[in-house]
Picture 1 (cartoon, one colour):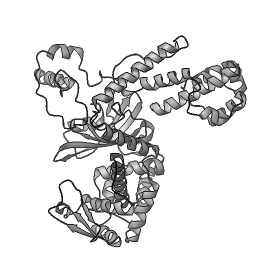
Picture 2 (cartoon, helix red, strand yellow):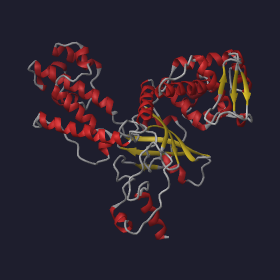
Picture 3 (cartoon, rainbow, N blue to C red):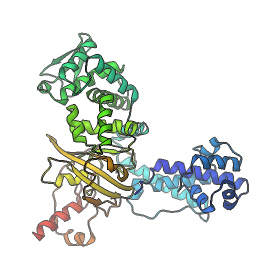
Picture 4 (cartoon, rainbow, N blue to C red):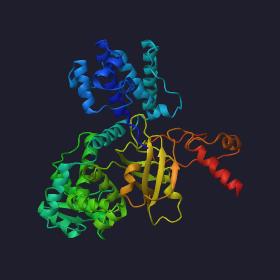
Length: 485
């Protein structure tokens, strides 16, 4: 299945279609007239004007000639008139996750709908969005900043060439060329910047590391001394602040941007681009891409390898993909996608704290008895079919899963593509996994009294149910299973 376009892409296609229709009608041409001039059937041209088909560049050039306009006139992102602006905004609002959860029908703005009715519909949608925004107003600044940063990275396919080059040059300068980056090499990189790595017991609880610019020291926690990815990563992040010329952040958005950049530098140093791309390209040629192999080759965590794959897959392997870190209660803590995977979002566009579908492998992986290997799964969604590889892990805060996935057509490059495990997800339709079947609800509604556990993701809305914080669907399924046993 081919993924559907994102809401932004859909809006751009709809705007283009409206502009073509505007210039066509201004010249007094019918669909048949224009179609004859550009070599398209009227039905095909109608699909383009309605934003349902993206025209090829050659077709756009033919249209500019036939309509007597410049290409920039057709590609402008401005609606051609107030009526078109209303239709485009209504289409965008009806594509939102917020409206999708209501399971209400989509209103097609036909010619018979007056402008006043369109304005009323758009106004109601705006008010719905405003009320939803007020409901999560407390963390709004942080969530909006994080959402903007995620969208900024998506526009760049999660790839930052300048930091890639900087990290690789520093690693090479320290004498490292192949294999896992050693602790000794990290120390040399620090020394070349004029710093010593010092391990202390009294590091402030709120700080991952502290850099003493006056005396040339980078203080790290002693728990990192035994080795592993953590020590190297924290030291590299501290160095990155200096190499990237960071100043004291003056906003939460700037703080998040700096954190992203130092994390990116550390990952690019631990898994330098040249060696990492060579490894991944060979694995792709062998049709044997696997995060676990990538992880082991460079001596990093599974999560670090999965995130690094997202940095390189699109820019260097010509492959779109998604990444998810999900806690045991199903809440997203990290996410990235440029493959049109329909991630759950709140009204601000934030994904952190949102609950993923229980049919996805990111949730199904927790139900497995044997978790030593990755779970491979195909999932049919409203946006297409996706293949995912999911691995679980445990921290003091609880269990989590790491998923990397691609659209169905890209699964051919990965180990595990032959899996027969398949699921169907219709989220954000609440009947998919959040709203219990009516027969179970009728049976257990008055007979169930669960005691809600405090939701750990305080920045996300609580699951809606009869009891605040309790997912009715999960409770009723639980009771049904145990009553039957």
